[in-house]
Image 1 (tube, rainbow, N blue to C red):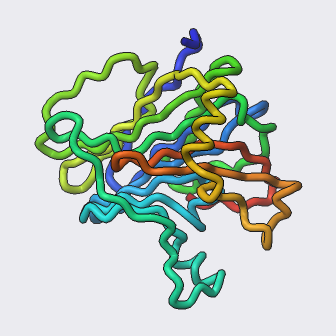
Image 2 (tube, rainbow, N blue to C red):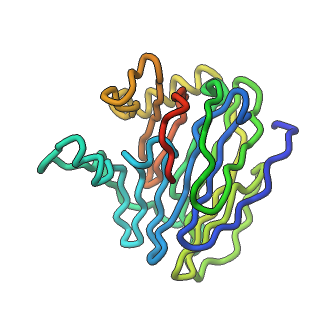
Length: 242
């Protein structure tokens, strides 16, 4: 386990966002990850700041959970009648009364990339930077969905809470962080489980991916979506609006 101290938890009202990254904003770092909600319903969205305007995970209160292009990106790509959804899945069973483990965001230290000039959020809030563990390790952020009548939940072996996001109905989202082993065997196995078809890279019509690589791996296991941070290098001019 790393001995470095995690940042304070973010406590966010309905319609807000929990934003976090791993590493150093002026050194080696990960994507900035975002877990946010709608203002007027309990829909929850997960993605990175630089790609969330194009593709994101949507955990709808109706239990329609999916990974899809946004409507705007589908229009830009002129998909027409083609389905903009990459995959849909059934939400997981509760791990305790009123609690679901909805998503895992894994950030290996080996995937960190040189920092770039990231603009501050326009919406209220901040980006919390988590200290990176040593090489061969990763931070795993677990996104938990809490029902309004959920029982108290005790979680062991975590290093901190990234944030708590309230939803309009009284439900909520809890993002926990843990440190896990992430040697080359673990990474190879995980990439194999996710599959080559599940790697999303930045759009080559905007930036040359050989010069500005940005990639995520994803897969769904037992109703929980897994997202793997595979690294990011972007120009200072990349727009970030979330």
